[in-house]
Image (cartoon, rainbow, N blue to C red; front, top):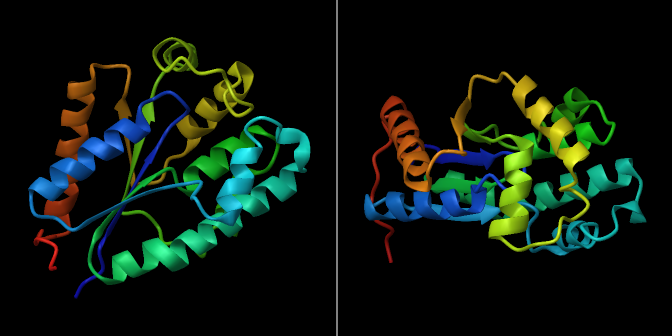
Length: 209
């Protein structure tokens, strides 16, 4: 069986990544695709430590923070992403190493060095980068989600993160304006993914029980 397809959905907080990953997974399953829907940070031990930083990022140094993300991803690749790709499935991940390069880069690390440290992770076939003005994303977080801003969601931080995302020019990146209506964003994502599947000559088959 040929290698599966790895699609990462990226962007600053509040762009609707989780919503769009869920909608895309549902769409692909309706087409008969075997889809693995996952996310980072994971629910593993390293991912849980990362979530503890949401309320107090000062618990660790920026270098230690990066190592938590890398070890979480290493386990994610070993346990979930690698086996799913080997089985020929489509893997949809809500965040991947582009987020690490952007967020840890915004905190002071060299994004290129972050990419190098993540060279063990499979390269995505497609990165759907949802774009939005940081002010709009913060308004969505506070007003629509009713959430308090965590330490990764501060305005200055998100501006730096957005600038770094904008600087990434890898060929696998497709930028989609997530400030548009939800259905329009979803439609553009589906069209982009369908183009990828055609280019890869990927044929969806129902999951075998």
